[in-house]
Length: 127
Image (cartoon, rainbow, N blue to C red; front, side, top):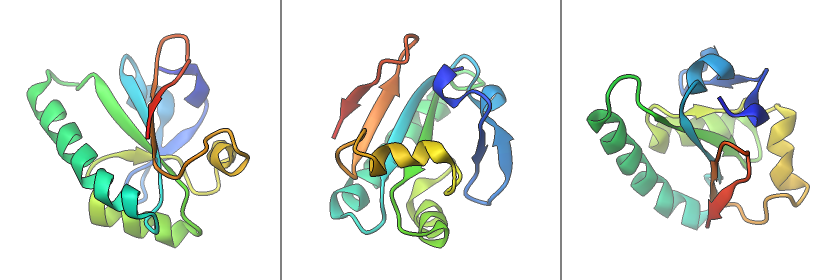
């Protein structure tokens, strides 16, 4: 489990809460910063979803990879709508989680970023 998400709860596209430590134990975690209003996000999200679905289908259970969506949307409803429309089975930080504010404070510079967290929690990113 990645330390950066320790003690947090994540949500499913149906709104159910899960403990991050349980859901992400022994997995490579990709933080995906995106927003429904961002055209590159809307273009890339289905590709990431297809990749995630194929990877999880091929992997032994439990799959060793998880995407955690970090919304850059303007409201919780926009976030849930975007998740339900394009995300499939990904987990997400709740809209009001303080960690979401990394993007708003300039720690993440674009609305469309994928960060892979390593064992040292040094993200490798692509946008």
